[in-house]
Length: 364
Image 1 (cartoon, rainbow, N blue to C red):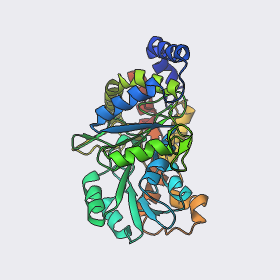
Image 2 (image 1 turned 135 degrees about the vertical axis):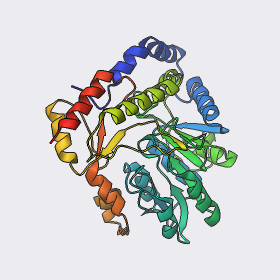
Image 3 (image 1 turned 45 degrees about the horizontal axis):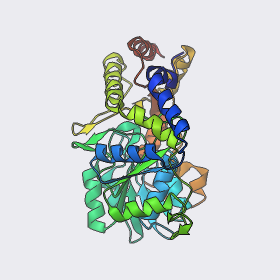
Image 4 (image 1 turned 180 degrees about the vertical axis):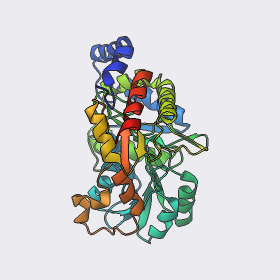
């Protein structure tokens, strides 16, 4: 069996350091907003070249709190992609704002800046580009639109820790950059966890209040906030893995290059990496009109694969009830019918990639 991701391989490689980190937290006895969270925040802020990083309970909360800190609420509109995990748009609706979907480009699966401008109205308050599957969205035109119309940019970097756009780490261009440490992510913990980065002092102050029940001083609450604090044990685990993140991403890129060299079918479109971007391959996602037969052949050979995402957000029941416009989303519809993600993780063996590729090449 070749899995989509094998978390046990990475744990075995890092076992001594991870076990020691967890043991230290247990012996120290500080479990909420302790020294590991503080140190991780410093490391991640420095890694991205920004002044602030704020640990939160999940990637979803990172998006939610960022929208709140940016003042998004009832009656506002936020433009994003329909081809992503539901959390990206879910948080918009939870704040009683309206998600407005702009179509994607098929080569990177990311939001099309050319489709964003036509969706902007006087109610638009933010854009959430998603760096899907680890490939950066095209940030220059998105940031230019934000400046032109005086709207916020909140980057969804849940799948792209360490990816770069024109030499800059994703998450550092927008007002906020939002990360997930879900176990399967490029940089991951062993539960839920998230991080927000920002270069804006006022946003950072607001985010720290919001994650802790609106409180900067114990039992004094200046806002209504959330219980959304990155767990100290999870922060300790991420600190261990953070030392290896460049190595992990480089191995993903090597694996992607092997897939490209070995998959030979003419009816398959391989993932693109634009020349000014560094793709970190959270997923290696192909496209084919024969997707289902390829997936079946892989299943028969005990090779895992996955469809991210079979139903675009504008087709999800949670959003169809809101009467959100669905016109001009043809690329998202097309990709939903054709995408297939293959096994991808740093510890994937060369022989496994060869086997996966061989099965694909000979599938009906």
